[in-house]
Image (cartoon, rainbow, N blue to C red; front, top):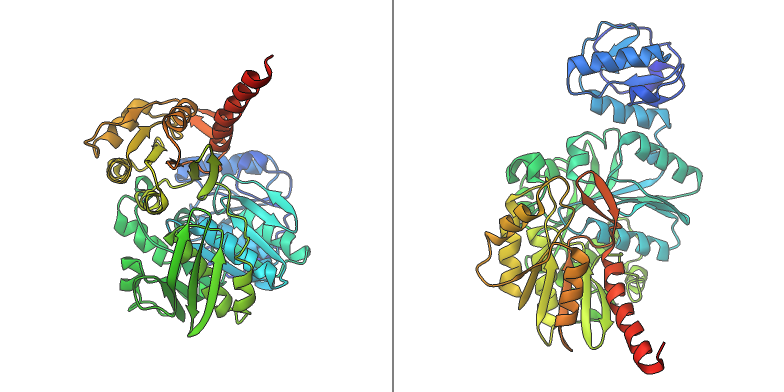
Length: 486
């Protein structure tokens, strides 16, 4: 491919030979091979120069950087991260433009909304790919990546493979980090969905204003053709006067284009009526919780915005599989164990409020907070858990390189009542399940379907579902032994 095609729609600040040929795009200088184009994404001039020299020594034919480096075949650009993402789209011939692209952003609900929209589209006979926390999925293929929204090279390659495989619609999670780091440059979403904006990632963004502004910056005609917005969120309501692209609204508590009435909820599902632009549909689903009603309304709003059959989409909700780690309910000896990914104050509040509404006995909660992440939310989550639960156990949740005891101390700053502390998460879960009685509900929050526990530099095998099943299976083994002997 010629450099001129790679750099289409990218502002170049210097003169160089745009007829240079190259083979692949690389952002890691150690992976460069002869004939590759290397993009310097480093944060410093010195680091960029070292990386560029290493790339050239490995045979790079082109160096793209926002630093005016004294190297041959340099393409000087205004923003290297933006240029890299746009170049990746160009390299794969802009595959997203050949499919319908739907982006979901918000602090909470991205994964579930993506799942619901995807399943609704499949029920309407569409070929669908998804990108998000659960990886890249399409036509039976599953590719796991570490980020909610992958880097542009991975993302565009995924789009390319999807398009070749006949995918018509892509539904993807768009994280705040992806917006801030320009990973979605070169993409134009047919529909952008905003679920909510509540506290998270302040370790990266510094304050809520920066975080909110980053989320809202997605909803411009640069990235999105039309929007679906939840008006139950104050930041969204304030934004309605400023947004300059077409939009529709959904919600439960404020006037909206799409809303729900007559809600009946139990641990095994919900029933309600959804009003979609004055067309009323009876919704039955095995999902639980007011926040899931909002997720469903978001999905129906999207289907309506696409001009597709909302009635058929509603039918798909009856027996839909919940996302792994999102309010998954396990019944054991008359008690209910709920595993949920809730790891923000708002997320924990939603899950515990829902659990309390349908709990006939006592409400238990096991949770922790991640290390080397937003510490301001810890005390708030402690206060929420203490206020709603009868018993709270604080434990580890990816402590990383931070002292687990210090994380617990931060959570305890928001707590006044007595509670348990058990840093071994498996033991904490075992204790709370064994302490609970019939009709009690145990919420295990924070990790959801994660398959690891990050301690220091180690990524240890761990899963909340496995932890619960170890308790249940251990009890079953005990019953078998008592009944049948050795």
